[in-house]
Image (cartoon, rainbow, N blue to C red):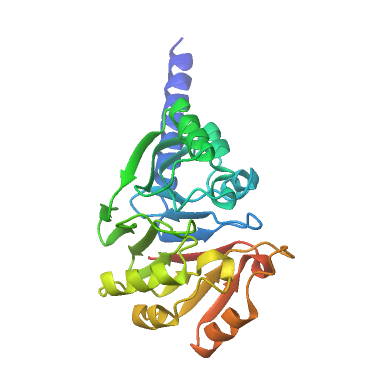
Amino acid sequence: MKRRLIAIAVLAAVATGLFLLLVISDRPAQARVDFLDVGQGDATLLQAPSGQRILIDGGPDRAVLGELARVLPFWTKEIDLVIISHFHEDHIGGLLSVAQNYKVKEAVFDSWQAPSQKVQEVLSGFKAEGVGLAVNRGRKKIDLGPGCGLELAGANQAEKDDNHSLIARFDCAGKSWLFLGDAPIEEQARFREELPDWRAETVKISHHGSDDGLDEAWLEQLGAKAAVIEVGKGNKYHHPSRRVLKKLERLGLEIRRTDLDGRVSFAYGP
């Protein structure tokens, strides 16, 4: 009897140790950004050292699930925040499948997104999965622990171009990334004037590198050193534009592309 009790105690201690190990290892030791390889679309996972996970967009389909499974531990089933840059299919097509396979705590989208059947489908699907919905108006700051934060900036009026996007800047471990969704040049010019204090070493180029998605003056103002283009191999739109690539080269930026490089990852910290 005594041996059995000892054996049970040992097993309990081992189980507790394994559980604590999983909890500790569930938190990335570094600030991490993964531009996921989802084909012709956008999906980016941010991870803060304090444990928060933020998904910006979800790509065109369920390919996002395979990518998340590759960059997250198999026992991780929570995403703290989903940011919807805008409601085009190549940005939201995989989001419901994410909400059905992960516990998504909250989703945020721009207050000026035009109502449509697709918007209602996505938001209704999120509600059915217990996802909290938040509307972003103007600028918003989100604290992600010591030396780490996220800033959102949206439209302040109805935009004529339906590519207009809720943009985000992730600042962590002394590094910074800017995510532009599909924001057109005119919208970027407005952000450039309204956000003169923003800096970003790495910029997710707008609209998969199309001709309407590059404000060179803002890249210079941001102090950008690297550009990431989320784009599908052999896509029918011929993204990225050769003109855009030449402009990025002229600015001296390192260029990374998901169609050529696959998933593009950055990790900084101790």
